[in-house]
View: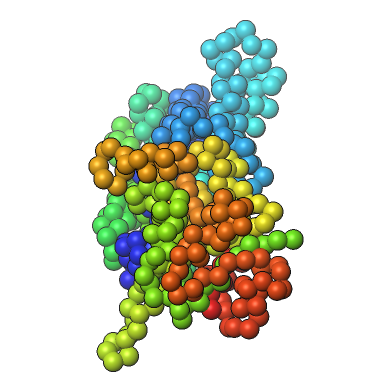
Length: 301
Length: 199
């Protein structure tokens, strides 16, 4: 059954409501929250101060993702209304999680600037704010998958696998963003390079999950099959196969494996990892974009 | 309890789109915004080719996915079963559009007229009911129903293929039709419990 675009034609129809801005909002939310989690992990486990990652994560979520979402609204002046139904709407839950993450993240970092505050990052309310920020960051990462998977009308999204895939993608991109920030911030790379193994496993997990996802969808409903074919053979194939699979997953995997196994000097390995990180981020955005664009409604009849 | 619904006899529909035009005339919807339309598709090959025609509109589901997706509470379900949109509450996030399995919702990009930039007197009046940047859908012509009239698409249908009434009233025309004829609902497997039935 072919996908049609005509208003008065019966068949499989593509969703046109959500596009580039929502893809950007979901991408920035995932990357930002993931970046915060990775930075918190680096600080706690690897004992390397990484405020840049924490601040970057908060900015990407609190400013970047929120702005992209607001810009997509038909009535931007009514933005505040979208958080009114958290008991039933994943968009409401997501916006509340984003706000919670931003507030707790700022409170955790505030003593770095405002030294008179009665808590620090390690003492008093600091660890409490960190825990709250980490929990809400996990929620932000998951929500972008749930907001799509709770749509019964589009079977390509309506699967429990999607939140998992989106979360793994967010963490993978976050590690890539961490490499870029470490270079920009002039941070000692010695500690951060222990993230390489995590990165390799995340890329492999993403590749496997993408393959399982497409295979499941291909043998699922008619609409999901058409959506999968759109990615593999249709007009989204160049972006999916070239941008998401080759550029966003295969190339970073090869680069990470080279750095991990070849034992390059720190400067060279840092440069290679940054290139890999940029590819992952570009691929991560392309992934969200094709995911939205491949959303097709189940045929009515 | 009253549960308003519609029954559409596909054997009678001739895809004249009178319902589509009546809906636009009654509700004054902007260009590219259709609350109801007739979908068509040709199937098979000569000599067994046939044309399928299905009038579609909001199904006013008993368990509407659009209601669950709406983050602002703009989508409401009235006691009589009509699912409506409160434009003053809608932020235009379009979550309901992606949630609706029937593609029955439309986003109002702008309020341009049909004949260029200047609005006709009819459009000037009818556009007062609409807002730019919000999502719209069929409301079973609520104003007409309140006045005891059937929705415009039902009124205008030249073959009377559409019937409207209380699905909970066993003596209503729609209930009798459903009792006596084979019928189906669109995408009933999704569990949305549509209030629009097809014979």
